[in-house]
Each structure stands twice: as C-alpha cells, then as structure tokens.
Amino acid sequence: MNKSKKQNWKRVFFTIWTGQAISLITSAVLQMAIVWHLTETTGSAMVLSIATMVGFLPQAILGSMIGVLVDRWNRKAVMIGADIIIALAAAVMAIWTFFQPLPIWTIMLILFIRSIGTAFHSPALNAVTPLIVPEDKLTKCAGYSQSIQSASFILSPAIAAVIFANWGLNAAVGLDILGALLACITVFAVSIPKQQKSAQNQNNFLEEFKDGYGTIKRNKGLYALLWIGVLYCLAFMPINALFPLFCMNYFGTTTTGASVVETLFAIGMLGGSLLLGTWGGFKRRTINISCSIFIMGAALAVSGALPSSAFAVFAVCCTFMGLSAPFYNGILLALIQESIEPEYLGRIFGLLGSMMSLAMPIGLIFSGIFADRIGVNLWFFFSGIFVILIAVLSISLPSIKNLEK
Image (cartoon, rainbow, N blue to C red; front, side, top):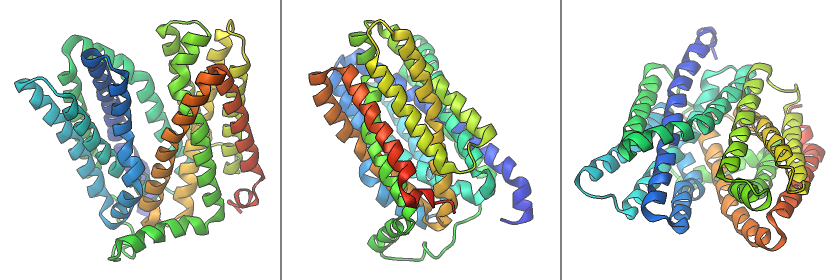
C-alpha cells in the first residue's frame, strides 16, 4: 500500500462503513418485518422455519462457488451489483402487494434471491477491506465492523416494531431500498484497488475452487482455526434458537424476559466490538480467540447449572456471552485478511461462510433431539463444557500457537 493510500484509508474505509452500517440495519428491519408478516398471516412455526432455512441455504450451498466468482470479478462491482439485486428483490415484493395479496411462495423466493445477493456481498466486502486498510489496523477495523452487526441486533427490532405497526410491510421495504441504494452510492464514491489478476485469468472453475481450498490448507494455523470454528458453530448456533425456550420454560419468564436477555446479549456484543475497535485485543491474537471461546463456554455452563429462580444471573451470563463474541469473530476475520493473499480472499470467505452455515442445521437437529430429552438447561450446561474443551484445544494446538510467529 503506497503512502497516499495509507493517508486516505480512513476516509475510504469509513465512507464504505457508513453506507454498509445503514444498509445492514435497514435489511435487518425488513427481515424482522417479514417474520412478523409471516407470523401474522400464517401463524405457522413451519413457515417461519422454512423462511429461516431459505435465508441461509444459498450461503451454505453456494458460498464456496460464489467465492470463486468474487475473486474473478471486480469486487467493487460485485458489492454494488449485490446491493442492487437485494433492493430490486425488495421492490418486486412491494409492487406485488399493490395488485394482490403476497403469496407465501413469493416471499420465500424473494428471501432466497436476497440471500444470494448477501452471499456475494459478504465475501466481497471482507475481501476488499485488506486492499484498503493497513495490515496493523485490520483488527480494529474488524471491531468496527462487528459493532455494526451488534447495533443492528439492538436497533432493528425497535425500528421494525414502529414501522410495521404504523405503516406495514411496504414501509420496511422502502426503507431497505433506500439503505441499499445508499450503500451502492458510498461504494461507488470511493476508489478501491483491484486484486491481482493472476487468479482472475484462470479459466477452470473447479481448479480455482481447489486452489482456494489449498491456499488455506497450506496455512496450518488458519486451517485448524477453520475446523475449530465449525465445532464452535455446532455447539453454539443452536443456543440462539433455544434462548426463548430456556427463558420461558425453565426460568418461567414471559416473552419480555426472553427479549431482555437477547437485548443484553446484543448490548454485550456492541460493548465487545467497541472494545476491540479501540483496544485491539492482546498482542497475540490467537489468545483472544481462545479466551473468547472459553468465556462463552463458561457463561453457557454456568447458565445451565443455575436454579430456575436465578434468571437475573442468567441475564448477566448473556451479557458476557455477547461481550466475548467479537473477540472471536473479529480477530478471526483480521487473521485471515492478513495471512491470505487478497486474490484468494473471496474463495476463503465463501468457504468459511459455507462451512459455518452448514454447521447450523446439524447443530439444530442435535439440540432439538437432546434438549427435549434431557432438558434445555442441561443442554446449555453440556454445550458450555464442550465449548470450554474447544477453547482448550484451540490454545493447545501447535499450529495455532505458531500462527503469528
């Protein structure tokens, strides 16, 4: 990165970051409004489950292949094109409702198309960042990016509640279109360096895919962290779905109690993101990852061991869960951006997204079977113990310990 780019990186990064922040929040508002629309019109848990599956299937199934295209194409154009596709899909939904009621299959199709757009956009954005940001600032910038997600978790339910209750689904659609267009404008307004053309000039799609996988496999530390992440997702992802059940069935709270702990988780995550953005974490960043996983596991295990009268302690545990999360996600993101050549990053992030997304339904199936039989509190406890063991494994593997040497 030359001197002028080093001087201008903050302007470029924060211009893009501002547009992405607004777009992420407006998309989260629309997703929440769609969930409420489906709940209001169908009242079917199966419909909501299918909508959730449709939302992540493109990432799980197509993510690795999409990563090849992200590395082939101009990433700035990919980001703008993905945002336009997401906005157009929302516009089609709004126009349809002016003429006739919106069929469920149409909503599912639109969710699928929007998910494909996100599957292109996310790896492109993550792959663009190291082309803009100096290497020693990547961890802090990852903290800023994590804070966007945290803020969307906190703000989107409240904004969606006001908009959906007063103006309906189409108002949320209009807001999302404006957010997507703003994201396009901010990306278009800045100059983004192009990745090296060596990967772009290959013609064999399968060979490019194998080359991307081989690139991360050759880095033994990152390859080990990739599989650590899959195990972590298997254990933790089902917890999100079990929060309401744990609150209401075990602790005997209402839906308000369930909302409180999820809000505290999001507030903790925002706090952790801001801390990562200002402090940057420990000098040895693999220590941050292991500590993050350990804190998450300890909070889960303590939660599962609590008596049903200790809901307040569970709420504190949820705050610590959220606080720990950015020190895993953000640090892993920065390590990949620093360790892998920019021309391979689209494939690496596509592969990472696929593996994490595929781990989610597997974990949900196991949690559904065992939580019903042994109790949701014991599922939290044993999941916490498993996550603690993952933390011990991550700090013990020589390939991970030597990653930053």
